[in-house]
Length: 124
Image 1 (tube, rainbow, N blue to C red):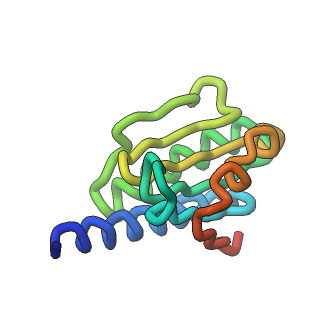
Image 2: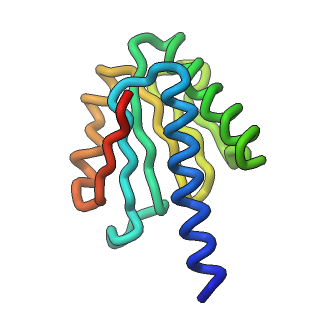
Image 3: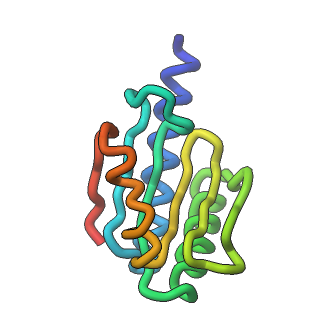
């Protein structure tokens, strides 16, 4: 039981650390979705933000990767979308970071799709 609680605490810390990495590059509208109480959720947390250009989207994703490595010695298990940079996904297994361009974020509407999750908005 203690291991499960420690893992949950770590996943929350990782989500917060990802949000900090996003803030460093002035990401817009950062939200943390706590998916732990959502049935059939594929991760404990989603951390979502957007940038104003694909260059900024790439920079935010790199900042997240650098920040989590420096602060927690953790690296993403998998990264998708870095070359196109309209939606970059950094998969840390139990925590998934989504860095969008604004129009792509609006189109996919992950916050609405997972509206059952507890939502924490982070000041930009």
